[in-house]
Image 1: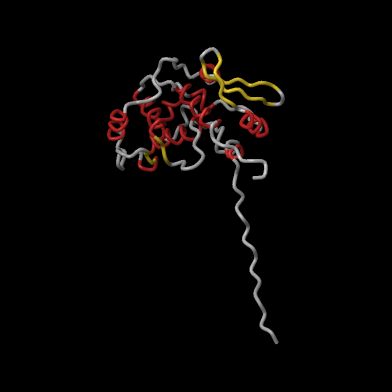
Image 2 (image 1 turned 45 degrees about the vertical axis):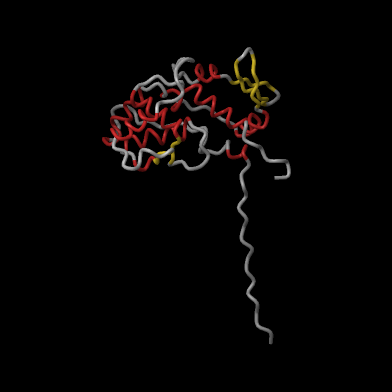
Amino acid sequence: MAPKVKKERAKPTKKEKSEVEAMSEPRHNMTAYLQPIGSISAEFEGIMEYLHRSRINYAITTQHVAYQSYIKAFWNTAAIETVENKEVINAVVVDKPVVITENTIRERLQLGDQPEDPTSIDLQCQRGLLLRIKYSENVLTNQINKKFLPLRYKFLLHILIHCLSNKRSGYDLSPIDLTGLFTALILNKPFNISRYIFNNLKENTQRPLPSDTQ
């Protein structure tokens, strides 16, 4: 009698997300929940009060309905164009034109920055801040890891990563430009947050989309 052959089940293959699908995940388009003044946990008291009065408060806490189909339609059609010597992102959603500019972001998110504000912070300033707030790892690297920050600053960087950046992975890591924004907020320095966000959107439009067969 022939021995029984054990059949192995085929392992399910992991479906790769397209660029457009990745940009409509729940981890993007997030808003932050800030505990109301008067009911804040002791360990978050200082940073929570700061965020309530900060220039990014409206942008990170105001929730809007974001339909996944609209997000996908936007990114499937988004293109960078120059109009009157200014860059704009043009797209079509439900047969309607959508135009995004730096100023659109500034007004809609109520960021209160100015077009002439810088979009970067000197590396020496960034590293000096990290030392002052007791970042416990090497400050000379091109990215910082939020797990080495004290709790209140870890919370702030967590919000910036999920609410204002275009990161799709590595959610513990902050690149130099985002660390610049982090530094500017803590030190109350001018920073063109609107242009930072607009540049992230431009970067998304330049990432290749998959073919119809993918």
